Image 1 (cartoon, rainbow, N blue to C red):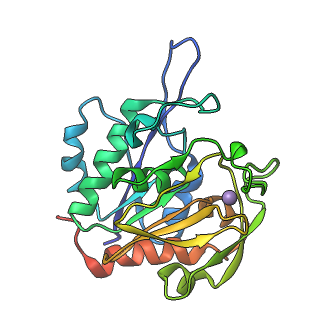
Image 2: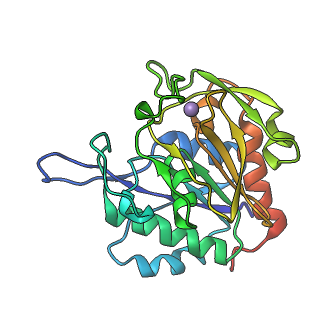
Length: 243
Ligand code: MN
């Protein structure tokens, strides 16, 4: 039986408010399938307390990318460059992550997903990298989403380093990043300008967040496949899906 991977859904923002779409990017679905998992998209419910019931039906949780996190959740006022926010979606994602950690479920967070993981356990974010004088690399790339943009240096002794090596090229589609790391996590990769690019939860099976988008890169290269493979394999070995 293949493991079932919960994929946290997103909501679209529509300017006139007439229609809101529930969605995930297809690249997440394909990446989970390529690694041998069955993706199951979680809609952003209006009753976030029911998240636990959904989580009991899956073996791992993929926290997808998307909009900015409301700075309310890390005790900051919103700056002008903050992007579109959906606080109810933030709360849904935060609660889902906390519950999944409580269940000791394997978790992979991507881009916003890594940021929400950090915020869910007391970390903070830079609301806009353009205002940090030292953080000068091109973190919001133009052109293809599969394109490698900048290098990241990966810490010795981390799970991530065992999977993809010490120094790799990654794509970059973010204007925010992790500022203060949650005490429950450690930084395991940085860009050369100091931007946090990956985190891992301390004393846990598989709980990793990456600031780049491996699900896009594996469409054209196998370099990032070990991240998804290790995530899905962790669901099999840890076998803590609650079913
Ligand atoms: Mn970056």
